[in-house]
Structures are given as C-alpha cells and as structure tokens.
Image (cartoon, rainbow, N blue to C red; front, side, top):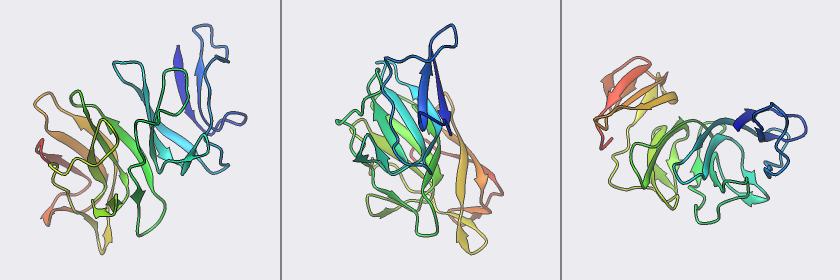
Length: 183
C-alpha cells in the first residue's frame, strides 16, 4: 500500500492507495480544514503513521503540525499535541526523522514547542512530549527566525538540516548545517 499526502480534494491531507492504485476505503482520513495539508508521512516499525504538515486539527482533535495515526488512519490519542507555535507566521512541519526507537526529530517553521523556545527543530519522546535533553538550535535568517525544510538523521546520530537560515546558534551556516546528536 502507498500513502499520499497534500491537497487531496475529497480527503484533505492524507489517503492510502492499494497496490492496484485504487483508494483504500478501509483507511480513515481526516484533517478537516480546507487549508490543511500533509507534507510528510512516515510509517513507524509498529505500523503507526507519523504525519507532519500544516494543520491544527486531526479528526476534530487539536494537533499542530504533527500527529500520529494508528495503522488504519484513526488518531493515536497516546501521542499528545506538541503545541508547536510560530511567533512569525504559520506553523508547519515538512520534515520528520526516526533516529532510534522512542524518539522523533521534527523540523519546520516553528519557534516554540510546548511554550519553550525551539528554532525550527526539536526531538519528541514517543508520547509526543518534548525531549528536554535535546538542545534547541537557534536559526536566524537576517533578523527573523529561520526554518528547516529537510532533515536527515545520519547513522552516527548527527542530523543534517537544510532550509532558510544564515546562522545556527550564532555561527555562520547558510541554508545547510550538521548538528550533533544532542542538538
């Protein structure tokens, strides 16, 4: 089966296709907003799905840019709302990575996770709470916070990030940088 995400007219956000390219009607969808979309979907080893994008509700429940779905598409209520916010515009999560069991890296255009400052990248625990052992990186694009569009976890745990930024933690890095495993 294959997941598709984006602007999907009758199933806004995400849908699943069968091997013959027909719509899998057993997969429940629902990002009920006309301006919502999914940038990224990832199947976890246990079959649950992580989705990232631009949305604030999933199946009528507040989820801001990141959510986890059960294998058949219903919202996984054990994964809470990370409360992503962006002081400078819309919150969006276009990049996710699962470097090891029990953690999730997410990147995008957000300045806070659960009210704490984060510059477009954070690590979440398996329940959706922010991992406070991950150091927040402060990205700057001129006088504004930068954002990350691409995130790749390397085998040694370090992270490659790409996006719109000029500095990372005060050091010059134009649009690409590598972070240590602890952020």
